[in-house]
Image 1 (cartoon, helix red, strand yellow):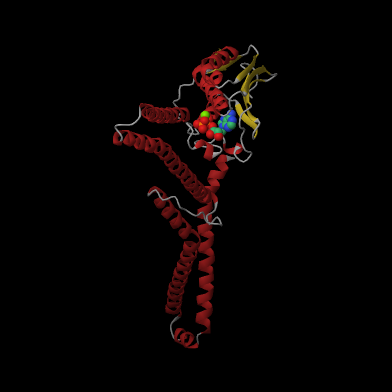
Image 2 (spheres, rainbow, N blue to C red):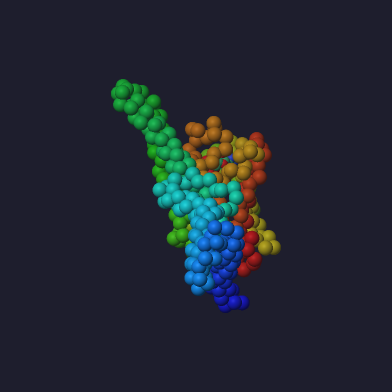
Length: 365
Ligand SMILES: Nc1ncnc2c1ncn2[C@@H]1O[C@H](COP(=O)(O)OP(=O)(O)O)[C@@H](O)[C@H]1O
Ligand SMILES: [Mg+2]
């Protein structure tokens, strides 16, 4: 089958060439003969010659005129071909040059102008340019988000340190309040850089991912105890129900998931609230639910919650310590474990984050 196609590909241009030449030459011969026969003067002149010479002149004239016709037809074919074929190719080359200059503002032609493999090539070049444009947009947005997140703590550190410098006689209590703010803002910067590094590492193909058997209930219990100062400090009650469950996971990255979700639950739950942590073994997967009785999340924010730098209720978050990277790290780690993370929330009543992980030997979630 493949050999047959190859032969056809090689033979087809030759066949087309032979057919075209035959058609054109016959047409040209026919036309020149008719022309000579109908031109009186030429006819009389030829009639006065001896037959051998007449045949020779006739043949010469016919050949010359047919070549002329062929040349005109060839020129026309080149012109038509140029319009239908050469122009889109030139356009494509110009597109490639534009992309290599870093300009991705390319408009894909509405109608595919090239056929066959050239058509596919042109489609994939336009698609590639579109993808590069999207990547460039994401990159620009990322840089602007990072600069914004760096800028606000820096502005406040600069402002407060200047205030300290300008007022040497400041009350010690006021001085200590300002130093606390400077410390918090520097911690925020360092957490931001930490999270950025984590996210970049998670997105690189070289991220160390070493899944091993892990007792998930023990890990969760340990982490809940580790953040006790935060939740008990706010008088939050913790309701913990953990099945004895093992999963195959990278211990360090998975613990980052629970830390991020628990910290959010504590951060967005007012004093005296409750947080429920449940680990259940289902038929095909393992499920962790972290539910709080906190401020909740608006429906319009829910679809964007796991995006980088996304903060719901910006006014409340402007002075907060978060950078909106925690949940994107959570999602990335859970994806690396072939799991899923989802959220349900009722504003004013609370939020529930559910993580589903595949069971060690069961089918993937
Ligand atoms: N348990 C929660 N209750 C209410 N809002 C939450 C909760 N968890 C996350 N959010 C919202 O999602 C946003 C993104 O969370 P996250 O990625 O952890 O960023 P950060 O905590 O750094 O602000 C938060 O700014 C907050 O608005
Ligand atoms: Mg967070």
